[in-house]
Length: 227
Image (cartoon, rainbow, N blue to C red):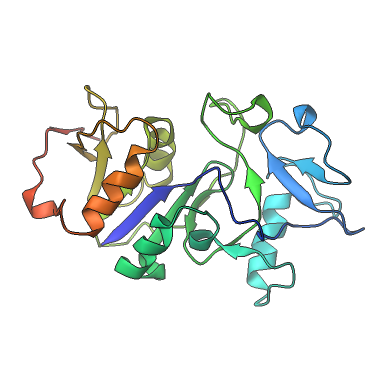
């Protein structure tokens, strides 16, 4: 089984950052032009051009291919503060854990990921928000030929990105939701998770799944979208 879980705003204090050629740290945000000054920090979007003539996304991919980690970037599954991410890794393994990042796309759990502050949440500060019409070359790191079922834990705002980054995957995709009406998720099986928790309810859902109180064999599928 493969688990995909959406990213979180709170990240580790020691999360590493990519740097410009002259050593300045880069923080990736949704609206660099609106970000508040922070020392000599450089603000950028992942697909903005960097100071070596390529995009920051391409630089990150090259960085991961180096085989070393001089900037101290965190693995994607270890970047976020909520302990549920590491609980997922312990349950299914790093190789079966994927992160849905509003800044970078669908990331393998072991992918070295820099500090960033990008979200789909409308409640976040304006400079952090990613709009649906913004151009991002999201990474799709889950192999299309994966055979294991995929379980997604995330909110409605992240569901379109999950569907897009897994649209060519042939394996079954199970999506939990907690709204009264099922969301639009073509090709996915939808299961209602009822809870009074409104904010970050997917953490509660993931923990219930991991501790066995929400086993798949007992779940009742209430809606299934067709491709």
